[in-house]
Image (cartoon, chains in turn green, cyan, orange, yellow):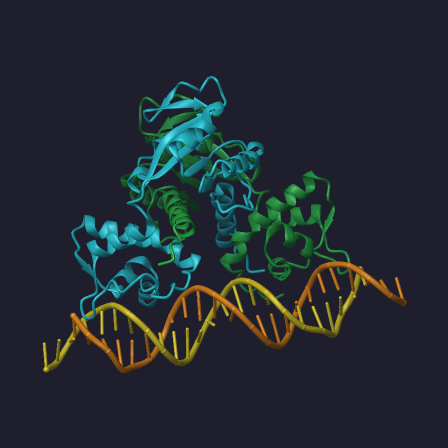
Length: 215
Length: 215
DNA sequence: TAGATTGTTAATCGATTAACAATC
DNA sequence: TAGATTGTTAATCGATTAACAATC
């Protein structure tokens, strides 16, 4: 089979959403669903659902629809929830600790195996059963544990330098919480979480919706 | 002037990004910039920049480009950084506290005036100089302070009910951190932050980039 | 079988990019 | 002025939606 056409990022970003809805259906013991019914629940078109899914394979059956459990598993596999991504959190401030406590990540294939900080008051403390280690130890830790992903929750100024360092240590992916676009000339994948961008968009939309003066 | 055509959400979501890049330029004392130069820095086309900006007005000048400071201010105004959105955080767990400590929001026009939780061990503690109040007080607080925005950092199960409650209390916007799509039949604006969705996309992209077997 | 619903091709829509006259 | 660069229209591209034959 020839190499498949690359799936667009728009489709990829919808996959976790499908995954969530299917999970909800499983919880209420719904075993099958048509693209039409799912489209009503999700507020998108049935056409889009079928198009999206068919980027990865024909998971449905004519006249029947989709089996919820098997589709859930298929999408899980595509997203890699069965993977064991070894993950470290760099920066054990409020955000780093919040993420360390968020148990959902483990179930999604991300294993938090280390938390690091430079603050001596934090080093030695435990978050979610993991002892916070000093940043001095990180090179050795990443190499010996073959860490895949680093979650960066450090101050703005330290972010670019650390990102470079991570690339050098062979980290495959970075989850960046600083309000900057990390774009490095490396193979490393970067996913930016721009919280204040999101909040500003909320502000804009509120103004737009509530200030509609007749002008 | 007739009412302008609604600006697409894709454009809106790029505005905070422009705002960040212009802020960076100001910091290094660059006073003017052409769409071409900015496009190189941001990794998008100059055409797109000019199209985006012209949704809101002609901020540039032929032969010159854009004045960085005035464009920064214009975009700030569009986004509402000069607004004073009164904001409460509901749920003072790790994530709620992390957000309460994140000073950037204040500078973007969002004033955190209250933090709430049901946990008696948290009530009375202070986060970022704000005393955590019991949820029993929230109705009265929102009404008397005319709160605009609620940041929801509560457990999954409590989220839909609270969202309904907020709508009833006249909250204009919700910043939701639970992994569910809040869609309510209200005027209220909802901005979802789906952290685990983002992480799963990171996982997918890593697999895609590093597993490229020749098949 | 008849009805339902998929997988997939074709049509539409909207967003991005290119081009260029206007103008500083 | 001549050169540079915008604002804006037109062309292109890609994503979404519609349609329908295939088939369970």
